[in-house]
Amino acid sequence: MPLAHKDKPPILQRPRRLLMVVAALLALLLIVYLATAATGFLRTQSKVPDPQMTGSEAPLERAM
Image (cartoon, rainbow, N blue to C red; front, side):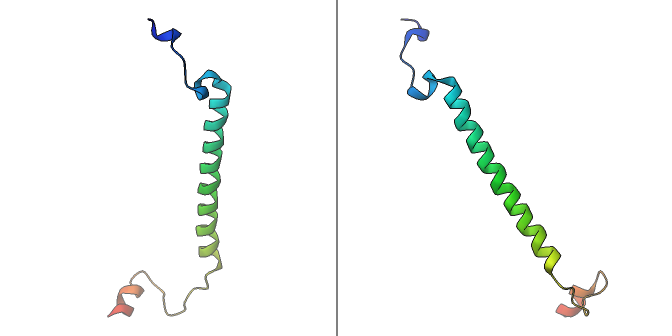
């Protein structure tokens, strides 16, 4: 019995629906990615710099 004549799963019987499911998953991942990036960006933009933390070695000096 050739493989082409076997019954396919329901999701593969309609390839357009499979593409829609994959596109929906990719869109959801893109939304989560953009939301995470926006959150990180907004957190760094709203921080007020500490006047004591100046220079590249300030965090090390302050820890000692």
